[in-house]
Image: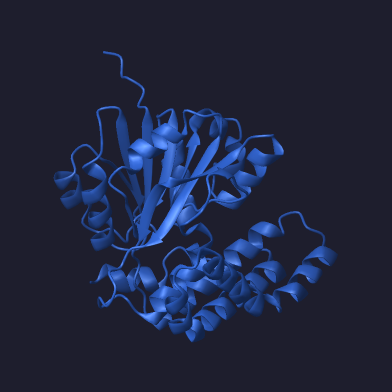
Length: 313
């Protein structure tokens, strides 16, 4: 019997914790059709995969016994996807009820990649509605917060982005080992492909972290980002970028402030999170500097204190 090609493949990268993954799958499975496949890729962080397989029998779970970076897990999931459209999301996000339908509708156009909005998911005054969690959200996702106009875009979050599978296959060497959205999007742009933003494709970010988890996370991802920017760069260029990284903290805070002011949303949250935001930006800048200096991401993203702590909750 011939298998029908799925219309949509959803690749879920699970690296935060089991309670987050369950919350995402509960929301996602309500909107699936017989032409949608869901692939969850995880490492040893997700210990009780048998429970998930039993609870979500239509979901394809790919688990590695050894620690893997989120970018490595993402590459495995994208390579495994069979759908005409491949959508990416992470386990600390919850898709809106019409998320899959909006992804499919957006790809009726010519864009090779379509990014969506990242909204804050915690209810006001909940235990997770902390200044630190707001600082993390604003630092990572304020540039994708609503309101935003629909149209061409220069960037999209790997927590809410989708691609025509054919466009990804044409650049497979770029992402076959690790899928970094900034590198993928740069290569698509180099080939004349369009990256689009749709404000109707919405996920809600709901990650909660401690200070120690935050500092490790921001440094690690900053280092990863810096290392991807200096691939094949000359020593002179790397030195110049390293010097520029020293100016990053105020620049990053200014960018976030600009995002919030332009949207006229979250002004109170920004004021409340101002001190944690400066610390978050400084940790990222230190990591980015290390990435420029060494040219390597390091092993810290394989199994971070953040994932270890969440696993036991």
